[in-house]
Image 1: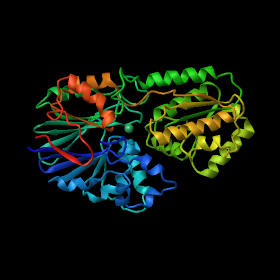
Image 2: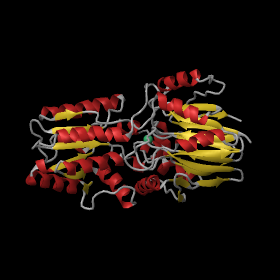
Image 3: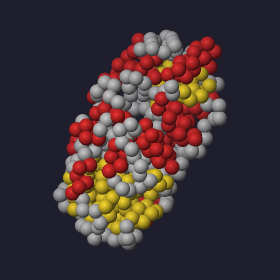
Image 4: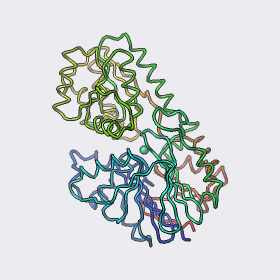
Length: 447
Ligand SMILES: [Zn+2]
């Protein structure tokens, strides 16, 4: 059976992920993501109303025109997890394919919200829920399996396409977490089995986000302990404490909520995406948040929440807000600019439970936001965080578990691939033979 892989998006950047695998006449698409930085660089761009072709020209979504070179029928569109760089283009591209969108419950709920918010296109693909550990048939001779992985968002999986020529494992995005705060540990046992059963692993497509970093990425349990340490150290502080993290990082938000309570403060989630992600996770039962937890997204309800916090005394609250990267319209940035009724006083604490995403626009915005907060006297607790992506020893362990015949580095640019190329080369892979460094818009014939 012919096996061909189209590397459509996310092979020259972190963002707009999309890969298609053709096995005989059947094609499975993995991820359809958005490159948010290409959108945010323009002021006030309303993506919901924009045409796919304009977004493709901007480099914001994958250029899926290469799909016409694949001689087969798309049988499934499979987003691996709910981050926008993996699902953010579904509302712009999925309607072009007569295939269901297959994902885990939380991911699918987020996809549904993306589709509902879309104004330009009408995505009517079937939405099919599939959990980690489950499988579905693809055509006559292939099978799709979801393997549980751990990442900075709950309900992440690595999809595996079992073909007569061996398994194609799509390895975006994960870290190797044996003690996640929510959900099951990464299923390394299953990866080892897949590496040894039948024809073994034909091809492994790997998330190279942190491939240039040595060592291993710590567990979410470590981030939780760091956060606990910071929050406990602030227990006796009688002024304002504000925390910010990734809205989609449900485990981290849940830890913040718990520690707020522990130090005698009422947690309040503020900001549109904070309300969206936690509200969705709570609604589908993916997380157990307190029934009376306040979540406010709309401007008026946020204003009312801030007024209540100021009138009842900010020493009684922990606002958990959007804006960990200094995004211009996010809540923490607005607080820094003095646009909310929350007043920061000399010595008030701002806890960033997030790292800075190393991208120039981002670094500039974060610097600006932090400076504005400091000018009001805020003390900054930075980088109370661990990454959601594998570092080198994790990559080594994955190669060891899967023993793939071919590897394709993804989720980075050329510079970002370099650490992975060195590692794979040291394990006997050879560029151009079984180690395929590629770019957006290429197809690679594996069999
Ligand atoms: Zn991700």
